[in-house]
Length: 403
Image (cartoon, rainbow, N blue to C red):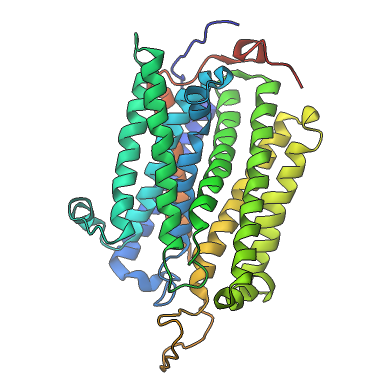
């Protein structure tokens, strides 16, 4: 097993092209923000009933994926799997980049980004949103420290493991906080569920690892570096297990809701009404984002190719967006229950399924967040010694048996 050598990435024409495309998306997002800021949220598809739209789907996906992108580093430092160690730096950098992209979308969609300093300095601890501000800022600090101790010279492995353990615990807390935003909202029949926190944790494992595999599989060929097929198979097999776990927790969530009479109408709306949310659930989330990639990655795993693993990662990411779209927007589309067990009537949208169609400005803002995350990760590997020169199977772990 050779010594792992890290080198900065030298920009190639392919990398410059990728940077220009990402910058174009970020620029389009900036223009969309200015347009929305000038005309107000009336130009978006959001309304009085659906106040969290497509940008929130992008933002939550990136935040959840940020936690999951740290999988590889956590497995190396906390659980001692040395074959993951050469990828640990990139894992940490990507998790920071994804969180930055997600928070950028979230902040720019709130309508008054100039008042961000108020949210960061004035806390209402009776609101879970205040808790999440601390968790997000703390994630930058803890994972930044984790990245530093991995890259610094003469740092004891015990220190790296301790900081890595702290980062692992913090990422679990961060995803728990994000899932609890929805799990603790009792007025929405589609949200109110304690399983939201563990569901979001396992979603982060799956979505984050899928994003990591996708960017790793894209970056290495573009920079002329090599990834061993067995390494990709191992990552793919782990991703397949996570995809099955997401399906399992999703099934438990819906079975639990069907058992509770107060959620039965919402479950019928999501699962059987034939609305866009039903199609997104069965086709986007279950079939494209769960069953197909799990079968690709776990059935005859020893014969899985790099291309199949990357394709499965793309499918899981698509399914992840469908999953979060159903949770966030489907949960708001169903009528609000403000006073459970009481009958309240008004002339304002009582009992109506709320409509929502995202506009191009929301698409631009969301895609800009993804592009920003890619740009940050790209600048990181160009400026710092993050990526190893070689991830061949012999260089990773010669003692690990092949498939």
